[in-house]
Length: 588
Image (tube, rainbow, N blue to C red; front, side, top):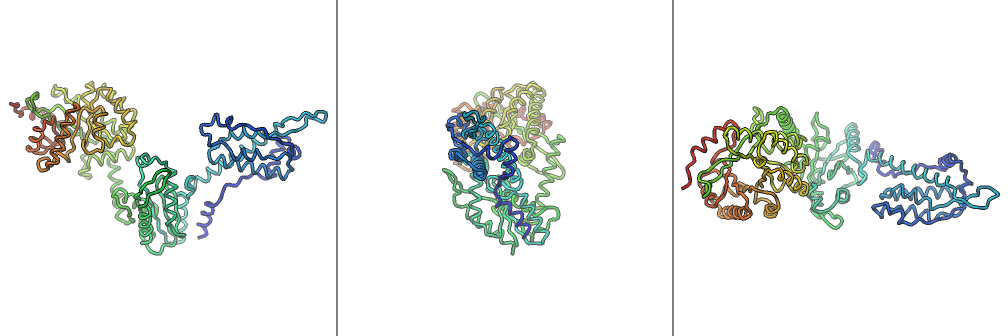
């Protein structure tokens, strides 16, 4: 295809420095110099590299190629030779510049070359002609500027690191191919490498991209084109597609290729990529382009953990419904239609506490909508954060929790606490401690009545930053609860090091405690460990009397679950609480 060839010819173009002999002559005239003025004699006066590197944090970025040309500068030059050496000098500088050398260092080094001239015929004292250095400075600045402009223009169509054409070029090719009714296949590839994986293998994005590109290109034929879409994401375009199964064959071959370790510097990585594909044979959508359909297929593969997903019309229907739901959730947040429910946390009777009591509850998110029924709290929260409304939501949630505490304390004339779940982004919000402090002051409640509930997985994104936020909140006087205890790989360490006062045993261990001796041993071990560290224990998922009795024998401090109550609105809770307390029988 001619149009494709024209676009792809850009790939092989290298930067060309545009400084011709005539252009050089024009610059020289601007400084009142002629070719004979610059014929010589020259001599080289060394400047040590230490002088250049002293202000440079990376000594490896010293312009060594540039310095090498200066060191070989002849004593005498005719006009043709001067053009040749100027050209060589500027190209050597650009090679250094590409690897990180600083222009200011080149300007200093350019003074190594001294041009001798006579002041007048009556004097034999040679002097350095500053005008020659001004010409060199001028030329170095022009060469650097031309290269910077080339980089900016290049980056509009190509990725600087991989040198692959970007999605803009890909979309242009697709549009032209469709106009010429050429059969196409488009395959999008996501390497499925998140920031946590990158941190663990200590590899930056550029090294990962280059290693992946090298592996992918080894398995592509001449009639396929590889594009850089974004970090860890690539596009493969097949021209003159013969049958749809070609896409699946390419994807399968690449999956097999990635089963081997991706070689990195001092490391290796096993990658399990996702693929989403579409062909012009299957592309029947009038609302989505070929690229958009491939994106839908890729997204569908990723959320369902399919390694390969080919576009079909049902995917559009699924995502249309998903989009509508997400819009409705955000609208509900903005219109204050989301609600908080309370699930009681009951303190079990023991030798100090004669009757069961309820002086705390967990705050749970609910949304009642006539069309979208049964949307889980997790789906609500995931959507809110994905759409960028996380800060608005957590501020609403914290303020609402403090308000509910104040209302319950006023209504029942007793101390009461609420636990509020925070997620990973919340723990990285440096403004969160101040927000909590303001809400506590606004509703005039004790800081200890607000219990912040976190999970171990919330810390993995940036543990150092998260721990800083946690300690600042702890200094306010708020308590912390560790949720889903026992499911993390380093629970013991975190329990020892974090300011945790409450440990919540995950319901996956509690629900089968009657039937499973292993679960009983696990729960008992957690209770004993937590007690040895001075922590209070809450068992989640308690649904029947037998489970309650077992936990009581184990001296579990508190329970949460349907045995006492499901979550309920504030009005229902205000009715439930005095009824619950009136029914309790003192422990003998």
